[in-house]
Length: 247
Image 1: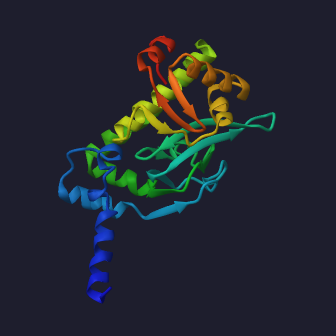
Image 2: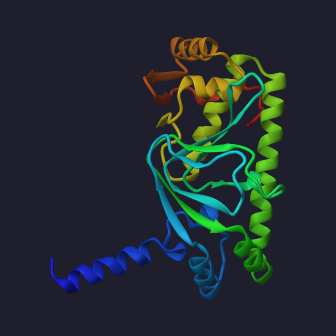
């Protein structure tokens, strides 16, 4: 490769990874920003971090500095509970944000762990606050993101308090399906990045209960399951199972 070609390729990679040209822009950034506003957002993203499966993005008790946009990959968040077990509190995928837990106390209250090789964009929160005061659309979008997290937390509380095991699993799978669809992937066929034990921790179910629910769904023709590969065969039946409630 010539020096000229190498320089052109490097320039292309820089442009390709900027916020203004990122294919996730409509998911994690507000729509309708002017060109100069997008340029400011490009400058706001200080670093991009790559993590291997099992790496910690941050740990509980660590000082809060940035929020993170998941550029590729999949994460889980968990907390250590009194009996020494890790309680999964959420799963985050491409185009979603991590780190919001640290805003109020300026310290992270949970761990964020990569479930597969992943990449994130680090956004210093102090810079984001300053830019939000200049770009009202960005401020409004950020408030929407925080509101969505609150609504999801309330949904999980309702899920754990009112649903049977099969209903919880149906709601979980449909939620994943919707999120994959929003990112341009198949809503009916996808790989689970998390283990059944991690699903059980998130849903408040034992591993054996999760495995039985998967087996029942497969026996009844609702799902096709091969290891972690899921194919939803009967979406309407899954919706009936979750009694019209959502994560």
